[in-house]
Image 1 (cartoon, rainbow, N blue to C red):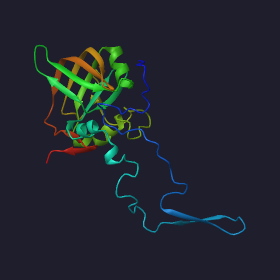
Image 2 (image 1 turned 90 degrees about the horizontal axis):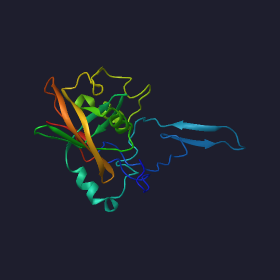
Image 3 (image 1 turned 60 degrees about the vertical axis):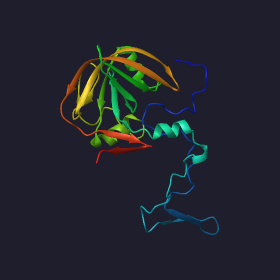
Image 4 (image 1 turned 180 degrees about the vertical axis):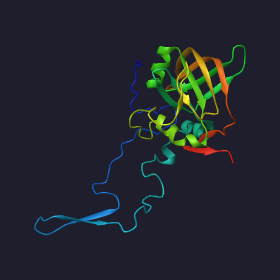
Length: 219
């Protein structure tokens, strides 16, 4: 989907993730110093005797506070539930901007990345599943947000329950099956509108929350 502007530097609105930054690596391995012997001989490495020692107190690649977008900082201060959206294919994406509206019919709204595999699969199938995540799902949430490696594919690990709307975590406390109604550009994201066709409540799982770039849980 072309929108006539450069999207390379935009944040992934509506998803749990990090900005794309140019992260330059140090020339020598972290925790070691090196010295070349006279005459061009072999290089000697001295291993740090305290592995795991703290290198930085803060993120050295973070944008300075006075240069950050005030709107992005405001959004980060709104605690949001972390959900997993999946669609037949399968495809999935961690989403932190999901809203349920009761009515006749019941509706669901969310902001997703228009360039994600999840949106392509949901658009093709015309349906998708949404599962609220809990504290045990932190690694799963990072994996579907693209922040954690997924050898073998996103669905290669964990246990899954197959549904007509997409796979859902077998240990999810609840999930909803949704029929896609419409979608439109909303800022840098895509505002997805859907009708809730089915809801499964299995157990009361405490919510996993996203606030100021970190996961949190209720005390």
